[in-house]
Image (cartoon, rainbow, N blue to C red; front, side):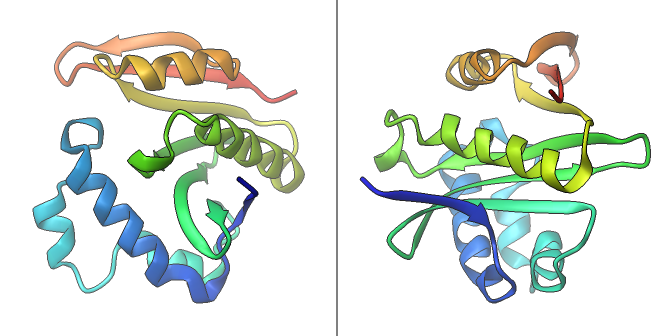
Length: 158
């Protein structure tokens, strides 16, 4: 498989929408957004950011040929922390190290764009597959919110 990892271009916001809605439908327990609510929206919040190439947001994709098969988002806040959201690889492509490579491309691109920043993410406590991926990528446990079963992990940018 020849997979290309890169930021999404302005004309690819509709492809982002398709895969984001798929992720919410396929794995409703792993994301805070709701499929039924999201599908009703004319535009998902990040669609405009992709089209306008927002300077504080980075939406990366994994492409097999021209098909978008994975996404991940980084949003930089005022405290110079990059929060990673919406990591997803289509089920038929999982288990091929694509998630790790996608995460690596986000980390690399964040370093180019923002320099040395701390990276943070949240993962559902029961999502063991994702927790292993993030640990292998250098993220460490910070805290856990019992009320929503969410674990916070962080990584220093090298």
